[in-house]
Amino acid sequence: MSDVAVMHAGAEPAETPLTPESWGKLGMWLFLAGDAMSFGCLIVGYGILRRASTTWPVPSEILGINLTALMTLLLIVSSVTMVLALAAVQDDDPAKFRKFMSLTILGGLIFLGLQAYEWTHLIGHTLPEHNLSFSKDLFATTFFVLTGFHGMHVTGGVIYNSCVLAAVSRGRYGAKHVEIAGLYWHFVDLVWILIFTFVYLL
Amino acid sequence: MASATHSTHSATAYLRIFYILLVLTIVEVSIVYLHLPRILLVASLVVLAVWKAALVAMHFMHLKFEKKTLALVALSPFILCVFLILMLMPDIFPR
Image (cartoon, rainbow over all chains, first blue to last red; front, side):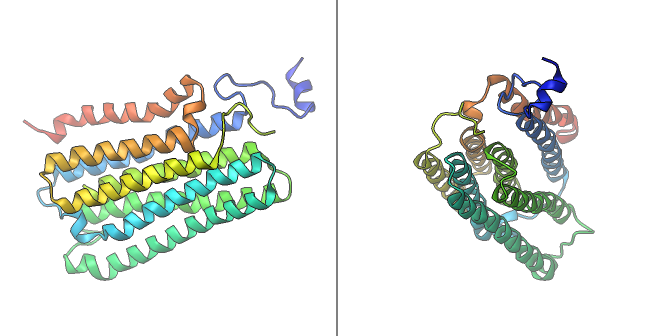
C-alpha cells in the first residue's frame, strides 16, 4: 500500500519503530532532547561561572527556598493531575478529563504568579539590599536567565495545555494528543526539579 | 485511539510516585537547613535531584514502558552535558 493510500485512510503514513502509537510522540521526545540540551548548557554555564567567580552569595540566604519548595510541589502536583487527566481521557471520561486538565492549567498559572511575586520581591527588595543586580553581577544574571527561560516554558505549557483542553472538548483531539502534551508538561516539571536543586539549594 | 500498549494507568500508582516525590523534596530542603559539609551537601542533593528527575521520566513520562532505544534518545542530552563539563574542565580547574 502506498503512503498516499494510507493517508487517505486517515492513518499515519507508516509507523515509527520507536513509538509505534504515533509519530507525534517521537517528535515531542526529539524536541525535548534538544530542549534539554538548551537547559543543560545553561545549567553547565551557570556552574562554570559560579566556580570561576571569586565571590558568590549563598543562594539560600538570598532566595526564598521555602517559597520555591512550594513551587516545586505545585509543579509536581500539576504533573500528577496531568497523568490523571490522561488516564481519564483513556477511560473515555470527558468530565473527569476536563476537571484534571483544568487543575493542571491552574497549577501552571499559580506557579507563574508565584514566580512573578518572587521576581518582583527580588528586584525590588532583596537584590538591592545585597548590592546585587541583573546588569552587574553573575549571580543575578544567571538566576534570571535560567528561571526566566524555564518560566517561558511554563507559559508555553499553559497555552499548549489550554489548546489541548479546548480541542479534546470539541472532539478533535484524543488520548494520543493528551499524552504528547503531557510529555512536554512533565519535562517542564523535571527541569524545575533540577533548577531548584542547582540554583536554589546548592 | 488510546495507546493500549501501556500497562495499567492506575491512579494509586501515580499517587504513590507523588508521595515519594513529596518526601524527597522535604528531605532536600531539610538537608539545606542541616548545614552539612559542602561536599556532603552537594553529593546528597545531586543524588536526590537525579532520583526525582528519573521518577518523573520513568513513571509520568512512561519511559519505563517505552522501547529501550527511546530511553537512549532521552538520555542523549545528559551524556552530552557530561561531555560538555569534561571539555570545560581545564577552564573550571586551571593549573
